[in-house]
Length: 186
Length: 104
Image (tube, rainbow over all chains, first blue to last red; front, side, top):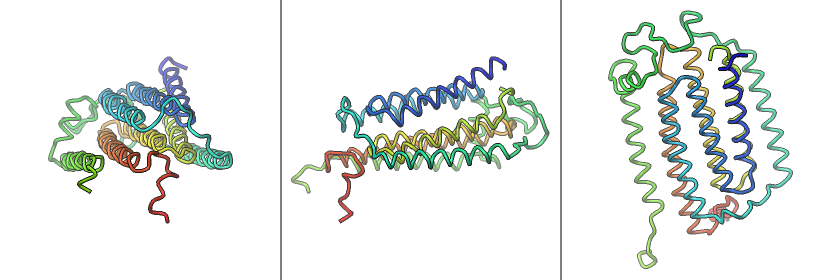
């Protein structure tokens, strides 16, 4: 087992252990902190897969944005020192059984399916820019940006604009939902 | 990277998905349910990146799907937390059992 594989299995163990703690911890603030560790581990997995840009986006958006937002909302709406109520024992057992059954089923399906790379076989796992000119597979920031804003056949400029509209709508929606109406205006 | 088969990465993301499902089933606090949803979305992102890297190394489509999923997850988390704040104002609790105004 090479050093790279050891790094992968350590990252996988870290992600799964902190994820499990995030959904089982009895204190809600600790749960959010375990989520932060799990998301950082996933960013490490992206670094291991040599997708540096995605790893950076993961850290900036998830760790820097969503987790901070979750922690703020915990402080606004919870007594974060208090324990959460213990879930009903029956519900815990049933959901654990269901989840284990689903996991085993999916693992069997994954094990039975032979994943073959498309196109030329064994085409060098690391993204070497083979063909397709400047739209090649090298996941550098320049290539990602060029293809994201390209209007050609493989460009993603239309989903990009749609997502920008969605973000604007979400921002206005957040303000409209959470604005405080004064009692006399009601 | 080439020493680890693709199926191991898929098993990790499957395990993360079902951990998120377990949290979604057992928790009754909306913020912890949102945490579970974030774990589920991240497991999907791992799948997209791993498929892109192993099966289509000369394309970038998985990267773009992951980027759009991250953007939509951020929008979703922001709207969800605005709803939590509003709900807390009305019910003084963000337990899903407390929000039963429309039920009766």
